[in-house]
Image (cartoon, rainbow, N blue to C red):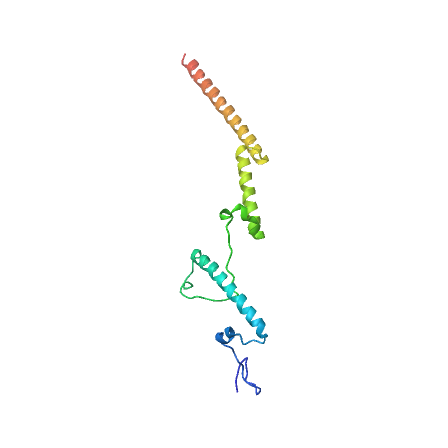
Length: 160
């Protein structure tokens, strides 16, 4: 008796079809559908092969992926696009996250330009604080000079 998940039943054994059987089209479709499907599939395969060849040249393979050719129909190729590498005219093709990232980056650059020009509220406050500190330092330097001059004058009077 078999043990495990797939136990042998008296009705028969499991039958697994080979890839050749699947490609031969041993399905329950009528013959006309098979012919139409085969024609469409041939057209699609020729178009996909030309697209895949151009994509494969640009795509870097990790590890042993370059050695083993995988034909997985469920495999989705990642479409990661960094915001700085994005072409502005192709923004309609971007995902929501990519669009938001691009908008965020542009807003930050715009804010930094305004900050440098002193047009933002924070820049104005910083400039006011800076001018106040410069004024205080100038006053302190003037006061030190006056005290120094006063000391020298007292020394000069004490020598007389």
